Image (tube, rainbow, N blue to C red; front, side, top):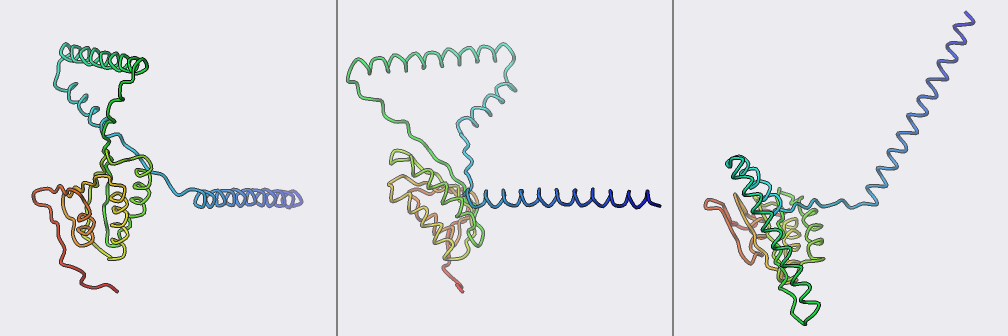
Length: 213
């Protein structure tokens, strides 16, 4: 009987220790989570579309070319890349020795996505993305927004439109592409574009504000 009592006391101590450790771990995780939420405003994901297209092209070439043709193509690409590198080195060397003007900066296209709901919740990420772009883009670049929205709250889409207005104020060309629909608030956003590119049967337009509480 005494043995069982001692075993029970030991078991109670073990359970108490385990519970205490679990509580400590939960507290640490909760504190870490709060710190992350307060100290970080999130991040953006950047994809180089050129690399994506080149990867798809390479996959297609591997599918349609035989081994000999593929080797010849790879050899040709290597020679072309080598020649371009040699040309760039020669140009840099020439620029050091003379007052030759630097070549014109290559245009950059920044592609964004906006999939709008009734509250335009995507405006939070759109704001951060535009802020990042405006930190380095200039009037020689272009912003392309892929827009899909049936519209929604006036104030929410007013905020979304004001984010696009920031691009206009920097005199950066803005193109908006619509595959399916840009209605109501989505149409208001589209009206800020320098150029609108729409699919043949896409719906663009608005009948105005019906109700705003």
